[in-house]
Image (cartoon, rainbow, N blue to C red; front, side, top):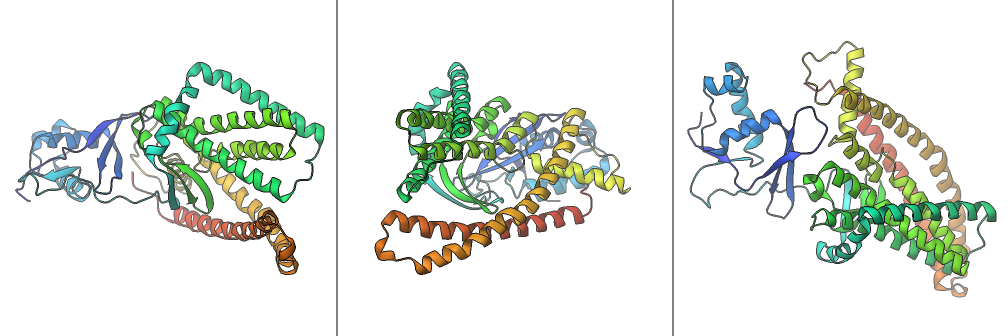
Length: 424
């Protein structure tokens, strides 16, 4: 055993993590040299173990210390290994020596979550904060109630208009480009809505960008700073994007009422579809994070799937004895239901994607290719060229997205369901 003294990293930020676990868990945060943050949610027993290093001490454990925390003497080597293999590499605990010879920063953290294969910042925190400082006023409780009523009336007006008209009027290439521009603005406002609500709760490092979520192109707001906020604050931030997008739809409907431009209905409808898509609780979008925060489960999908796998292994008589109950019975039941619905949703999504989106893309690609080949480019304006080329590239992208989705989903399901039951 090393005789070196160790102590808790003085650069750590520690607070209780707000969730529904039966016993409190603790959020540990530590910055790395790149300005990113290592975040770990640790159970209370682990927190008490680390608290022993509030004052410098050795890695070993006396019998009285072990008995005080309910451990057995045989647990001593395991606790020492836990500190050495987990806490020292993550810099939760650092050696005591001459100041300056030990770095108190965390190991370099990944530049993006594992489910994001690409993240390109477009608006840095300084620029985002300039907008958020004004937009956060929209999230005052009374204004949100009024805004919710306005959004509901706008959506009803949209459905009524679509029902009355039956179909959209013909639109030209310039109208399509206008729709793309207004739709893009709506997406930016959606992300600024998240940033404004986070700013209201004290976040100042939110950036906005575009990225690749598993196999889908997405816009994102980096809200990692909200981990330290309460569940209620996080839930407000989760719905803030669709709320802002709903206000944008309300403006579009007012504009349509004044001008009668059909393209505004197209943009409003696409915004409404975007809201429904974003509130899907099974993909890591607004609905998923909202469900996670309302249930009080930090990693909802992984926890629900682990619960489902454990039940599956129990049914196959591969029971884990002495498995601890992390959540109460209601939350555990909700996790099991969520795990089942999530599995059904992804199975349906695979079939629907293959039958509908894949077939539609394959059927439309030859037509786009013929038009690209036979079109008289000299007689086409810039808008027509942009729409034709953009449509062809979009169909190619959809085929690529479908292929990647099927590949990634199959690999993840195979790994999860074929591996043995994780230990308790």
